[in-house]
Image (cartoon, rainbow, N blue to C red; front, side):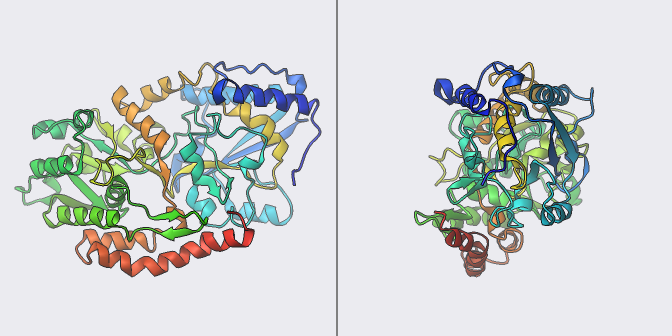
Amino acid sequence: MKKSIKLVSLAMFLILIFGACSAAGNETVPEYAMQIDINEADLLGYEYVIAAAAHGSGTLSYAMNPEPGADLRGDRLLQRYRDAEEKYNITITPVNGIDFNLFQAYWAVGRKYADLLFSMLTNIWGNNYIQNGYMYAFSDMDIDLHCGIYGPDPSLEAGRFGDDYYSVMAYYWGLPPADIALNMWFNPVTLSNFRQPSPHELDEQGEWTWQAFESICEAVRDSSDPDINKQTFGCGYTNEVCLETSVLYSNNAKLAEIGEDGKMRFALNSPEAIEAMDFVRSLSDRDLIVDIGDRFNIVHFIEDRSAFFLQYSHIAFAYEGAGNLATRIEHPFEWIYFPRGPHGQDMKARSVYSLWSRFFYAPANSDMSVHEVLLPYLFQPLPGETEETWQDAFERNNFYSSRSFEYYEEMLNTAVYDYSVLVDFNNTIRPALQQITRGNKTAAEAFASIEEKVQGYIDKSYNDFIEKAGNH
């Protein structure tokens, strides 16, 4: 049941909001200012708290509370806050970081912690906050989830539980950047040194395949120096299994999938998954891919001794800290998705929303009617931008070429949800993939060894809740 506060002419306001977002084929209003007078909705001084978590630590938690004057997009976000405060008689309070223990303590005494949580999937789903009713479903609100401002339709699947949708992104902000996995970057200098073609050109010719990737790895592999840290190679694999999962997804393999009965099932026992990991194993056995250890070890890539690097998208954004690609490499690097496997040729999806991807969630002890008023305005393109121009500053600050930005945008719009947070990825699937790459088990053996355990976790974290709710 909704909580509510008294709103002046709320019915008229919601009619206008719906019209603005759903007219003209569900397109958002192209102008910044919506045609609604402040007097038509008075939120009576409500304090709207937005708490934003980081990728574990550091400056990422400040994405929703930027320092004035430090960045154009940050200033535009602050201007949006001020405009919304004036328009709806509301106070917007950004909070750096999320204290989930405090969230629980506040919940226990009936006190609101925040209205919006900007958090990683693993923190929300992994702690059963959605399954146990701690979050509102945005699909229960009087907003049009499919009008574009809340993210492309595939991204909404990352918040789907049964028939309800619990997460959104501020798509037209570009801040914080939407985090997708697993992205691939290539080093033009390394490729040029070994006279190898650009993956962009190969892709345009329809030839960006596993075979092309393997050929490049063979061409750039130089193990002549006895110091392994000075050798050159095509691609490294790490403790994060970014390479392994990229190959899986590129061959249309899935960690899990939901059947017509609404139940989720383990899916790594497919021919596509076994083929993908047999391919990885063949590269490792021939020393064409190299174990570089830590997932953030970008040294080889930025020193032109590696052709490719794979990670979550945030590591390549200038907004996201001082230790990433954007701030450490001295020359341009380019974005590309992983080449397609034999069973991936007809796939539309190029990437996934995975357990570290970040979305907005609405705690169920916030005020739903305030969300319904504020979100359609708050998530519009930032001041001075439209849905056609929001990319300009974002592209300029984070990409070395328009082609790379186009790849990012394509991946963002077509990425699918991989359910990794619901299958106990870190304790089951990751170790299994590591065993294959490092030659300890075949793909068939590794996947068979974890099937029962993974299915049990899926049942515990998803199917049992669905069955209890009758929500499928």
